[in-house]
Length: 185
Image 1 (cartoon, rainbow, N blue to C red):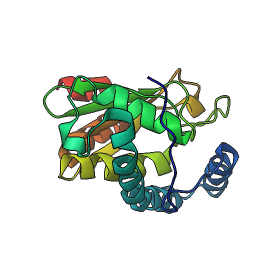
Image 2: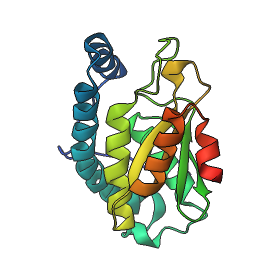
Image 3: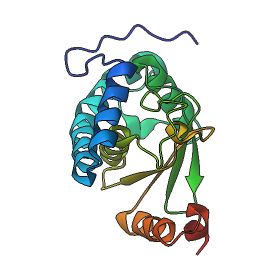
């Protein structure tokens, strides 16, 4: 199916990869946790406009008005096409137990392959996806990036679920364990 023509309608702006990378460089240079959190908060705010754009885009692509009508088997494909249309990159999605989702991307826009970052750093995206997915789900959703192409990982991997689940993942990582261990515990 060819991608429909899509007009941003003024709510969502085109912002280049170089700009996203420059923001990450500033944060890395300053080494401020508060800066990363601020960028994540900005992403969270941007997620509202992104979801509104998704609702405008959806009828032309999927022939439905309400995102709640998307068949769960097609959700990953629909989200991937939407994010590709805006230039963020393709995503694959899979269920993470009963509690959440995993979103993977081999070409996510905020990542900068070869940057040798010490930790996942798609901060803006994590906030944006939290708001977008939370609005879609009708409840709070937390998002944490656990693999990042900026860290020379093969993909960007975002976990989406409850705050409690992601807190357990964070604590596992802080204790030197692999995030997958926390998901199995």
